[in-house]
Amino acid sequence: MPTLNWKDLLYSLLPQKPLPLLSTPTQNLSAAAQWSYLKIWKDHFRNAGAKKGQAVVISLRPSPAWVILVLAAFWENLTVIFCDHSELKFLPTSNYFCSISVDSEATTWRVNSELELFEQGACQPEARSDYQDRVLFFGKKVSSRISDEELKIVLSRLAISGNNESVLSTLDWSTEAGFYFDFFPSYFSAREIFLADDEDRNRIKQLFDDYEINHLVCKESTYEEIAHLKSISKNPNDFISCTIIRDSQLTKKLDRFLYGNFPSSNKGNTII
Image 1 (cartoon, rainbow, N blue to C red):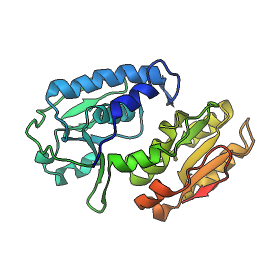
Image 2: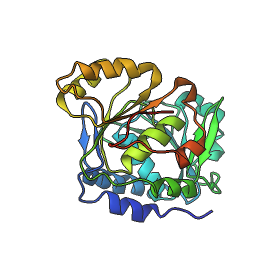
Image 3: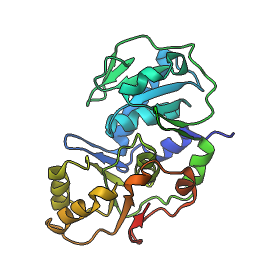
Image 4: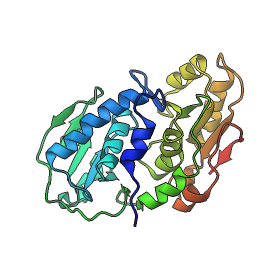
C-alpha cells in the first residue's frame, strides 16, 4: 500500500507558519515552534536506531508533546501505537521500538511539558519492522488501525483554514473518535486548537470568555453543559459548528471518518 510523504506534508504545513497553533493552560505553541521540536524528536528516534516500519507506543494525554511525538514518528515512517500505559503489559516488547509516557516507569522514554527526553530503559532496535499501517489503537477490548492510504483520502477532503478558525478540543486524541474526528481534521486544516479536558469546566468557561471559539468537539454527555457555559460567557454567540460524539460511538467505524462530512464553519452541528 503506498505511503504518504509525511516529510513533504509537514514541511509545507509547519515551518515559519503561525497555524496550526496548540494552546494549553501553560503553553501556546505555534506551527513554527512545533517544527523546531519535531526536528529534535525525529533525531531522537533516528539516533536511537529506529527503522522504517517499526512502531513506537505513545501513552500521553492530548498535549503539545503528544502532537510532536506523533508527527516525529510519522516523519520517520514509524507506526504509532496508542496504548494506555496500564495496558502496555499486554503488548509484547518485541512489537515496538520504544514506549513513551509522561511519568510511567513502565515505558522506555519519558517526556515532560518542556518536551525534553528522559531515557529510562533500552529501546528495541530488533523489534518488529514490518508494520504497514500508520496508526494502531491497542487495548484489551478494542484494537483498530488506519493506513497512510486512508489518511490520504481524508487529507484530500480537508481545506486549509483561511480565517483563523479556532477549535475547542475536549476528546482524548489517543482514541479512535478523538483522532478521527478531533485531532486529525482540526490539525491538518491548520486551525488554532484549544485543549481542555471535558471535565475542566473552569478552563472551558475561561476559554469562552477570552476567545471566540468557532468549533467545538465533545462527547454527547457533556455537550449541553459545555453549551451552557458558552451561553453565559462574555462571547455568548452560538457556536458556528459542533461535532458531537455519542457516548456509544466513541469507538467509531472508520468509514465515517473516511467518507463522512467533516463539519466546517458554515455547517451546523454534526452528531456522530
